Length: 321
Image 1: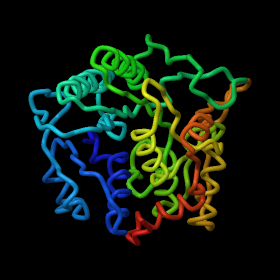
Image 2: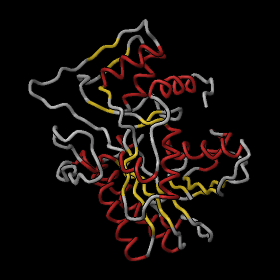
Image 3: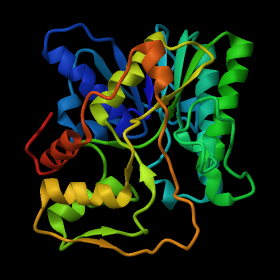
Image 4: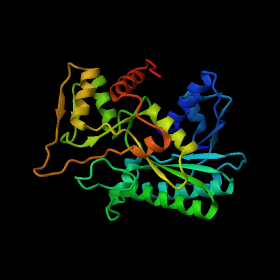
């Protein structure tokens, strides 16, 4: 079963299994929990009427609405409004993550689910020291809990601890995926994701606009790689262990905007609106992925350039997948 199966992560997984199914390969029986399953099926007809996929109505914030049936061996908990999150209050975001995770874990314990993959966030590390480099799983920094804007990251950290508590008390095999930044055909272009905004600007606007100073350092994993990584962690990840999920190929936001421009709209300008304060450290949000490489054999397979081209193609209706 997947919670959050109708969002970016869920669609990545469903597309991965759909491709396997169409290639004649075996796929698992999948149940997707959705607050509005009929609307999802109508908007995404490629996922309707598949023999291996069931869409069921339920809400992790209303535990009585969660379905009761046996036979679920694996659970991916990916439900959190990362796209619409800024429209929620900080308290609503925190409660959605923490209460939703607790309800989901309680359901998993009751239904005797064996393995759980919790989709957490690289935000749980907070801001590492400027001399640390890429963030690995041994870094135990954290976002400031006294800053309300950190509700998402602090909520994810609290939810990780809930995973540990339920694993200890109920014997759940819980693996944590600390997810960083991604790109792919299902990424919204009109919200707060920089790479999505740059692709939108390249396709439809006068210029590609960088709202900050362009010095922030990021990395982006393609949605197809994301799906493969999550499935591997669900199946083979060590219980009680966290794995970073993302790319370790760093790029500044200014460089990213220029790359998008060069690939999609070379005639357009890149406009950087902000200026860096004197003496300020660059904000680095890039994972070390050595644990995923060494323990699970995972790697970045789709180059960023290709991911950008395929995302733009899909957004224009050319179906790159």
